[in-house]
Length: 163
Image: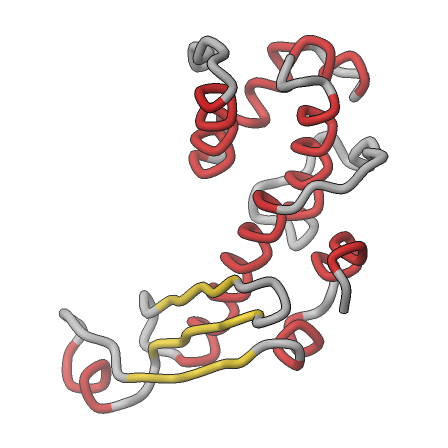
């Protein structure tokens, strides 16, 4: 799958995305009792085509850890790959826990990139207020930190968290 298919990649079901990945299982370390130390519940998911990987070992279940690792991988794709021309996110009230959230985040970042990280211009393109856009970015610590790092790289002032 080519990077031009980023939006399709972000919308794949876990089984479909897993088929494109190299998945390895290992024994988790740390607290959690005998099960954690005796079973291969830690999961690492690699997407060789993009050079990305993520892992998770927070649960005792291999299945849940794989789902969490795939979710992290989707967010890495959303954060690191821009698509032009940008598309306005379909659901501006998308929950951070929604399966469609990585696509929402990617599209918001696409618009911000096209607007040279000017949140006021980007908010206008999304038909929401600038404060609403900042709140959407801030509710996800990973997205907010990424946005602030982009601003810092371009020597733009960091924004204050919305109230």
